[in-house]
Length: 358
Image (cartoon, rainbow, N blue to C red; front, side, top):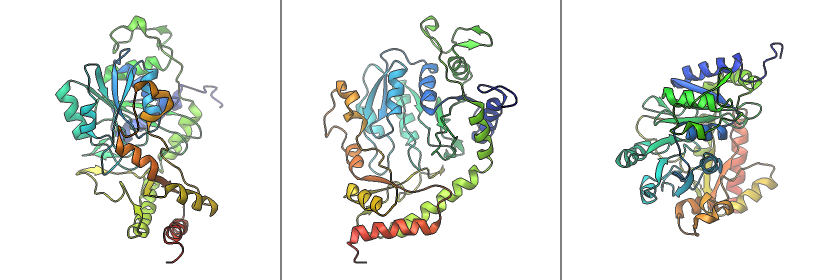
């Protein structure tokens, strides 16, 4: 406040350097939300009007709407059977002559199948970008999420593992040209005081920048919270393990992906502890009545959302995504949660599923 520089200032630059060190990225570009980070990454990576981008049907809506805002067309694929990442086989079936990119999402507590996605992309000459908004701290073979392809993003929405006190986000990439283009796009296309051509875009005269600068106060909050990030990640993991221990032998609860083994070399970070229950809505009502909050991620898959009705999907097209939307619920998980509170949640789940007989 004393400096009088409220956005796009020295504190943002300090946060970018700190995140480069933390993630190992050559470039971190701070912007004003995770959604904008996706839009700018897509544009900086050369998405052209009408290009198709394959995305999973089970994810937050911004994954798909970012493609629309960047000028592309989202094409939906199903998710894997034993997890929530995009299914490379389903993505392969969604390919057309207009497919330009694939954007897997690292969801809840594990990475998408990047080996399968990258193999498919290499076979068809496609660009891979990662919606790694939830994935700070997740790594594969030591490489941070968002850097397992051409580039990725981070969201600092307050509920995230590293959260601000408002909206903020970042683009991650090792590509110098994409980073330079994203930096200009976030600031009206300016390079210093002048408007500049966009080196990563084939028709720069048809592209303008926008106002997506990060606020310095958010950067200051994130710098402070970054010092405790590793401790917060371990705390989340311990609480998640307690859920697994309490719920693992309870009939009617399917712990996916928490109950599946990590891929070789994968470092998980538990952002959300999700379980699947047949009577999900009944359980939500029961927990709500007991004063316990839950979150349904997500009640309707993207391919069946009204805003994408023009793409012509029908129920049954992507069965795994549709099934999860009916059964999945997130349980309370945050670093300040006490183990005794986890036990109370589990007691109520057991009471609901057994009719109070256990």
